[in-house]
Amino acid sequence: MMSRDVNWPPRSCDLTPLDYFLWGYVKSLVYVDKPQTLDHLEDNIRRVITDIRPQMLEKVIENWTSRLDDIRASRGSHMPEITFKM
Image (tube, rainbow, N blue to C red; front, side, top):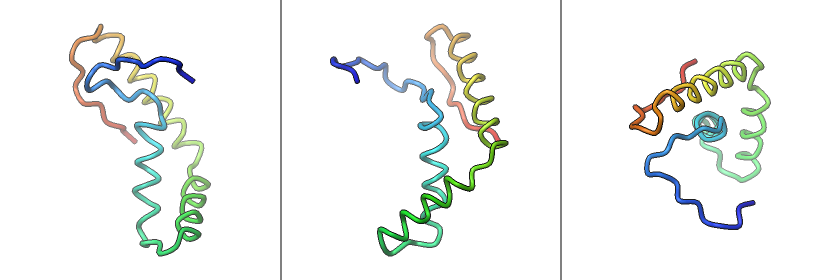
């Protein structure tokens, strides 16, 4: 936990797989069948996360290391939008 505010630069890169992959991926699938109850939504979330295969996670990690390389190479200059590639 941080005990002080952090002055993040505007438009800073999302470096964690949770930011650039998991939340968007899960959200894109859990609402497909338009859950009407909290229990249904929770079941969908569990199902989507359980269905994530090791091969997909390997691609996520490959993309993460590629992002780190791009950030190092930019040396703080403007970064083009980075997308997740499957």
